Length: 247
Image (cartoon, rainbow, N blue to C red; front, side, top):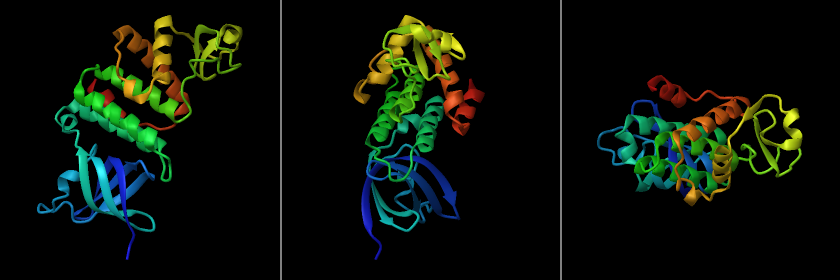
């Protein structure tokens, strides 16, 4: 008899398999990113059909196999239906999930990863923070959580905490005054943008979306993040390409 396990997580992606089955990629708190197959879920009489969609969060009861899991049941805690009714929010939510799938692996200790994804999808759902800011915060924070974030509290070259107003992507962050001349491609960062970057990097996940800034600061930090990501992320996200085609 196969072992039965109960894992808490969020569905990152789904795909069709055969005539009636569906393949799920789930980020779980207990075991990181896993693959699970929902047998016969696409039959109209199957009660799991609505529970095997992207963004669904809950308790997943599964049978453990050698290389994958088979889904038995789902106790849904949150559907995030609001994201599926709004094209922009759906695309951004899909992008968040695709990024998380890129960074995570099976066996990870994924509590922080799962919480980051939850609060970010929830911020999209509530709509209290502008979508471009939610995206920016998520992009910066996910790299920080995974240990490759933009260094904003100490110089990435020497560690000095007396920072200048110069950002250098190849060096890894904001430089101190002594290392400004060592930057490969220095870019000016305003005092408010640096403060915002430090807030994002240092904030607890529960407070991550409790602020707003001007459109100018969002654009400034977006340019900085993109220059940073071009160096440290070696993947083109399909969902991001769709977002860019719509804007």
